Image (cartoon, rainbow over all chains, first blue to last red; front, side, top):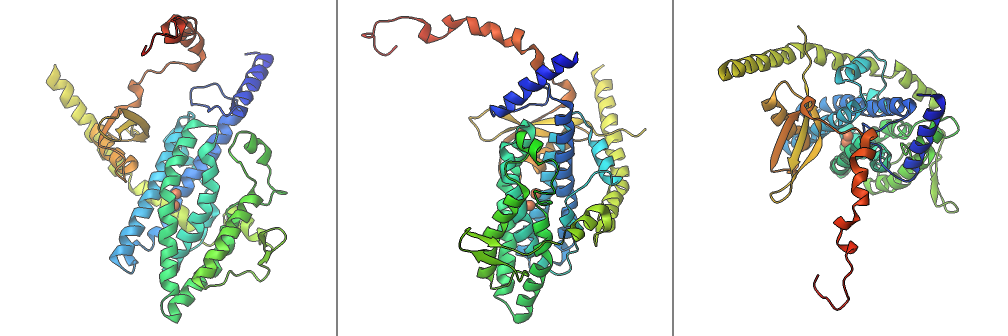
Length: 318
Length: 94
Ligand SMILES: [Fe+2]
Ligand SMILES: [Fe+2]
């Protein structure tokens, strides 16, 4: 294809997206579109998968059968989210094995929030409330993104997220209505999860590099700062209902703007965790790699069994 | 002899009276496992009453680049639509 022809295709492609048409896997697409989508969708899938680890930590120690069943179902949903997204990503021509390879070798990133530890039961409440809450705000706009398989996966994911956030908030509510020790546990969890949750929306608009292109392709509909503000505005009143305090002395409702003003985010911490120096980066990746490696014999056995059954069938037929 | 699990496409009938619809794909060693995985991945909340799985390699898909030759001929056969035929207004129920 000549350069001019590609330019022409490029223009037709961008116009289709501008008209709100969806792009499907076999359609022609610019290489940059393909690569950007592989990167974003796989990062998203990895986040769902690694995200199971901090919560899985509490399944066997949930305080009641009701909580245990709910947490188990929530973690299973996150596995499902990872699988929807991996399969959407594979339609772009990358194999599942390559995707896992990128995660396990550390080449691919996942959401930094999952590199923080879950030290008390209240952390499970705080994660559902804050982390899933932030994820919902990030994900809802993606239900309308331009790449068909990604948009369809996000519709399914978003439908399931609401239960995640509600079960988390209910845990917080129960703790806050409990003994002073239990309420202190809830406050401590909020103290530790608040700032990392704000960081989930990514760097400030001034620092963010690919916002413009992402907006065009509808990988983003609002900027990081707008989404962060939306999260703060909706979450602070929820903390008030719980009767616990958001750990930000500068947090104040601004009558003029109708939004909460808030304090400076520690971006050094954010970049440290992104670069692999968070409290649990190493532990998370090790857990993931070890599960994959220790499961290898099961995968091989299943494949050997399937081949044997197939051979038997063929023999019978002839 | 390392062999990766093949890819399967999953189709789900949400309720009787509706057709099976493509839900997504997954990896499984064989058809039986593909069905079980499809149940866990795509129907955790009663999303279906029936599941079909088919190994992705058996699907033949048309190429969007050929859409011109494939679908455009339908466009100049406007006589396939009821509005092509001129009838007086007095004719009812037709
Ligand atoms: Fe999720
Ligand atoms: Fe979730």
